[in-house]
Image (cartoon, rainbow, N blue to C red; front, side, top):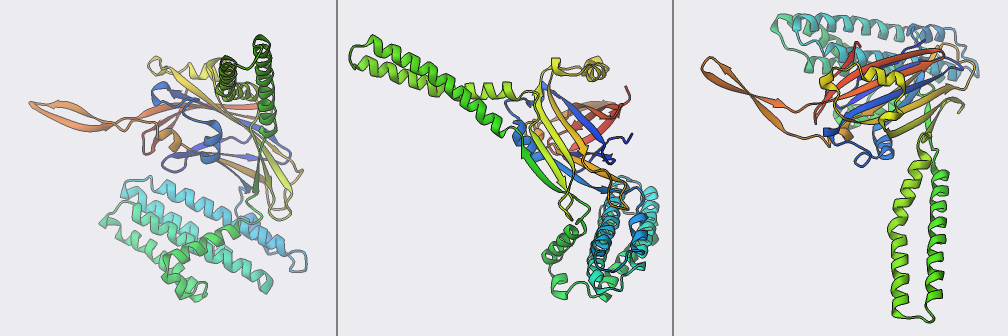
Length: 452
């Protein structure tokens, strides 16, 4: 069974990754236990708005063996019909180098001591250099294929240089490791010189930071062709919502007509009193119509999936996998027993009253086998918590302490803790984990997996 992995993404977001095999079906459930004092509930956080703005689903081909697509590219025939194979395999290799490099750079930046940071940076330089050599070893002689190689090579060289420059800019500074820092800088210079020798970018483009950045974004999208799937999202409740609205309107109109007919029968002629009564009846209809419609819609929608994502291969437009998604505020009685038991294992001081938000997605691979060189499909779901942060209090307090006869004070920030239970089902196996997510208004401070 492949396991789901939860990790921090950016300052106010986290992501979950997991893999799928051909014809596999699995389900991911997330239960957010949000303390009452955070002010996040069904009235302040609309599920539809939160999903559209802050939950991003991504799907792409995945292979544990990074070298496999490149090795296969040596044997691709350049005859008609094989052109797309070379491009897709090349893209897979470059895409995974980019993902791996970004992850390693982020991990290396967590090393705050220069004694740990610079050896890790040098090792990363050596690994990156070897992968770039492998890429450039098999330059296709056919002009039809060379343009794909040049685009990928140009982007990967630029992205690698940018990754290491960011590493140096954000990493610890130390004069004791000037040699190691120089090696990283030399590697960046070599890549810059390599692109210049290959005439990949014009001088006009290089002189304008906006132009070179936008060009590389375009090349980034090109290397995702055939690897990252196109997403098509469908709102599953659109017709059901129209039906609920129509049913509520019909009931209200029937009741209003009953009152109107009774009023007419009690008045022999049109009077001011009749007009006033009819005005009150129609006013009450307009007052309660929206509230009743919303109430009925919530009752009908409860427990039903709200969206469906179709992920299609960008080469042949074939649906590779589908993702059915639920998102709703729930009550404590709706929590499954295994999740409830895990939440009860918290310390008594942490069992504060909370609101509950449930996210669920059921994934299903539609095809029997992937293209040669591909082993799995990787799903990634990113949750942005900025909508949560806006409701948090800004306040920073003071902590006073006594040091001898001197009173000192330290500024402390207000932090909040969200308990998050992740349940991942694949076949007969179930992965059940609890995380403690600590955040303030500006960032997720820490994500800790609790060993219950």
